[in-house]
Length: 176
Image (cartoon, rainbow, N blue to C red; front, top):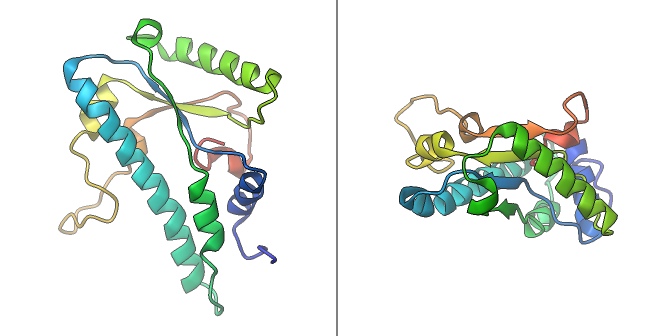
């Protein structure tokens, strides 16, 4: 089945998941308080719901922009392989700087590659106290805000790119 109708980044991600590759952001937790113990998993779930909503919104958008029916199967296959990696070690990450996270992430990515794991990880997220506080009461995707324009939750998250000069659209699509 030809998937030429899929947008290029989605088609590339679909090809990657066909080889049993998982995808998703590497998410670093850098705050460890009793409140963050409750908030962190909720915020990760919220971010994942926005990622899923974005993916399936693309499917819906593709259907409305073409005269033919868009097959949702590739989107289901992509979502089934979504598996974010959570870096959650208080001894290693509590209160560390973005520079320290970037160094760890680069090292971790190289280790994954040397161990034979296919990795295109080029960016990660940092969930610090500011992120958790900004997102803990954030509405889920699609919730009506009485006409108010909603900010996207990614605006509350620090995203670190290891290859910031890359123009590859795939890089920006949910973690690489």
